[in-house]
Each structure stands twice: as structure tokens, then as C-alpha cells.
Amino acid sequence: MHIAIVGNIGAGKTTLANKLAHHFNWEVFLEDVDHNPYLKDFYDDMPRWAFHLQVYFLNSRFRQTQRIKELQQASKGVIQDRTIYEDAHIFAANLHQSSLMAERDYLNYLGLFESMISMVEPPDLLLYLRADLPKLVSQIEKRNRDYENNIKIEYLRNLNEHYEHWISNYKHGKLLIVDVNNLDYVHNPEDLSVIIEKINSTLFGLF
Image (cartoon, rainbow, N blue to C red; front, side, top):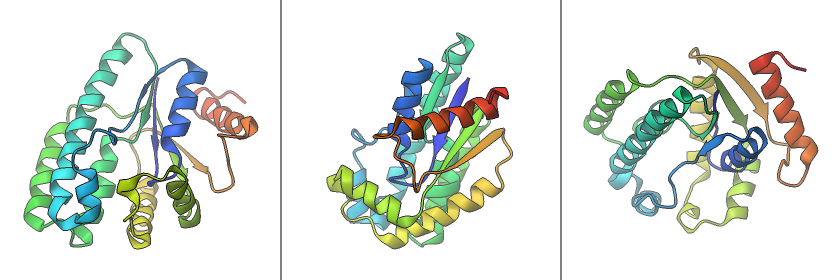
């Protein structure tokens, strides 16, 4: 099985991915943020670095999809933190719509995405973590990453709108939406159990 966790910055994807991987004893694939050479520059000057950042993420995510395919062929389960779909449908689309990525760069990026996506299998389950702005801001402040200090509320709001639109039209496979505004699966095992039960029910019909 391949479960992909999607959601806005600060929604709690990485934490949940690690916990689910531990629970199911599956491989976990996390987003490459710590080694991304463009992130800090991007948050300091989005128009200048938007295209570079998105191409880096796209390439990184595509390599992940190929590795995930190999593991599935070897009958190993996978938990993935963020998908290649989000790179194009959420982040690049938002940057273009907000005039932070030039039309020329955006079309170039989409061409690259379309070439890659033909070789990508969708996850067995897409798990969307829905979070409102106060939750996102609180989580971002808690983890206190230097390069995230310049994230603007408007940027997070726009991303949330893109997520809601994309999720409402998602047709690639099974979808589970979890509202995480009042969940704390770091400190409350019961909250994690609720999510695991929802996953089992959606994937296997288990209650």
C-alpha cells in the first residue's frame, strides 16, 4: 500500500507520516526541506527563486515516486509526506496566480510536470489534513524554522484555497479528509488511533 499525506505548510504531515510508518511498519518518504538549497532564498524573495524552488521539489518528488514504485513491487508499504501532484496543482499554480512565477517559467514547469506525471502511479490513499490558518501559524511557530519566519498569512491562505479546490476535484483514487484543527496526535494517542481507524476503514473496510 502507498498512503500519501497532503496538506498545507504546518498541517502536521511529517509528524503523522513518521507515526503511521511506525504503526504500520512501512517505509516513510519525507519532504526534502532540510537539504533544499533554495528554500531560504525563496522565502526572502519569492519572484526571484520561485521557478528554481519548484523545479527542485519536482525533481526530488519524481525520484521519490520511482523509489516508491520499486518498494511496492517488492510488496513493501509506503507512507509519503506530500505528493508530486501538490507541486504543480498547489504550489506552482499559486505562485503563478499570485504573479510570483512568470508565465514563461510556469509553462516551462508545467511541461516538465506533464512529462513526469505519465510515469507516476497515484497513491492507494490520499490523506488530506485540513487545517485552518490559526492552526497552521501555531504549528509553524512551534517548530521555529529560520527560513519559515517570513511566510505571510496571505500566502498560507492562498495555499489553503488551492488545496480545497484540488481536493474537491481529486479523482485519482481513494481520498480521506481529516480535520486536524482540534487533534494533537503528538501528545494524545487517542487522536492518532482515530486517524488510524479512519485509514483502515477507508482502505480495507475495517471499523
